[in-house]
Length: 226
Image 1 (spheres, helix red, strand yellow):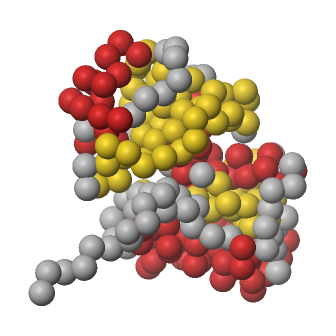
Image 2: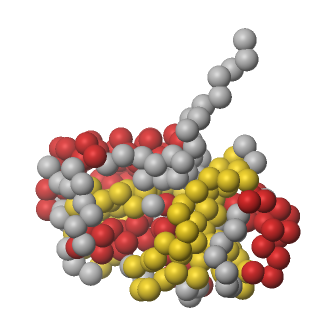
């Protein structure tokens, strides 16, 4: 199986190629420069592996939630590449990718994924890890104030930038629920690629025009005051 994955929903811009069981990945911290970096990174990764877009089984991308501009970049790029190569697309939740990263780096099996959504809010979801490429959603992904985050009963590992941005609020809210946390973790394309491989095998790929972003917040921008 050959899957190319893109992720641009946070300050980290990353691409990954899963090809016949081998994973190739590149990443760069690039706030506000994703649009300029993502295509050259894709081209370099494919050239390094000697694989053409038309040889892929599918493309995958972090479909959000995350920074609006970043999510739009990944969506537009993956749609363009998929249309050009006539390949299907696998949309992957960025919160699920974040939880997969927590499992990969820390061995966490019950992960509370939480990203800074700005405006005093967070994107969050809770997952149980059945396998490195299979995570079970325990509560629907949502947008809320940090003070309203409430995972199911039990112990959880906290992952993501929300724990850095709203450390005090989440600590007061969650108390002793957390077994540990890593507030430096961000969604990465390498985890999206692995998750997408299973989703693709289970029939969750879509046509390029149906590869849509998920924002959770309806208000994308606040109008400037006159």
